Structures are given as structure tokens and as C-alpha cells.
Length: 170
Image 1 (spheres, rainbow, N blue to C red):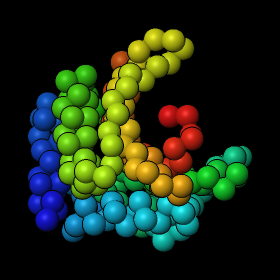
Image 2: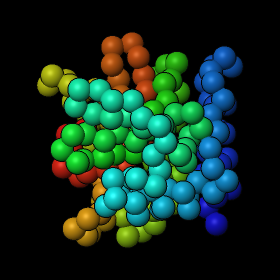
Image 3: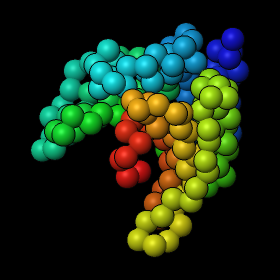
Image 4: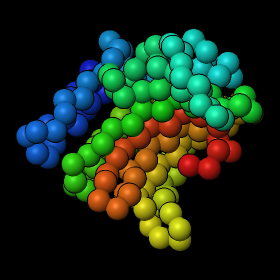
């Protein structure tokens, strides 16, 4: 039932800030169901959601078969068997990044439901604040971490969704 609000929020992300920023839209008709299916495939390394991949030294990056944000999602598979589903979107300025982050956190929380507990924390890089992250956790041995990040890297801003190992340093 949250399909329409998530789709509207994704569309709203493209309307926040300057007029020249890219239009964001979901690559699926039902983003909440897709997110739940992606989370459920975590124990399989997101095998169901992998398309063609590119091999690098310690990671293979696959195009995502189903994209929560069209054109912005990938599956990363490291050599140790660990995998993550990641969607990353740039922002033209801190205000747009903050708005996208807040909207994404709200929509992810709505899709996951009350059994997922959010925790907001400051991201750090070299001992200095570098954005925010909201990490959603659910009890369970094989349950992934689902998180939304607002990343500040000098003058660049981005927001990303991470579904993967709770133990991976984000």
C-alpha cells in the first residue's frame, strides 16, 4: 500500500532544489515490495537481482535487475562472499542532499515497517563529521542492515541506500 507514497517521494526528490537536477524515478512499479524482495534475497547474495557484472581486483559490480531508483542501483559482490545492494544519487548542494536524505529515510521506514529499528548517527571521515546515516536493523541472524546515508565529500554531496552486511564498515 506504500507504493504510491514511495513513488511520489522519489519523484519529489527530483523537484527539490535547482531546476537542472536530474529527474529521479523508481525502476519498479512497486518499490516497497521490491525493497522487501531485495532484503529477503540477502542470504543469497542478491543473486536474483544481478545482471551483467564488471570484475575488479576485489569486487564485482553488477547492474541491478530491479532498481529502486532507476539508473542508480548496483549489486556489489566482494571476494569474501559478502554482497550489498546499493543505490547512489548525487545532489547539487547540501540542501538538496538533506531533503533527499530525509525523504528517503521516511520512505524506507514506511516500507520496512515497525519491526525494523532505526538509529541515526553521524558519519565520520578522518575524525571529522562527513554527513549522516540512518541504519535500520531487525533482529535475526541473517538479517541485513538497511541504511540511508547523506555523504559530504568536500564540495560533493550524495545520498545512498545500502542493503547488506551489518558488519561492513559504512
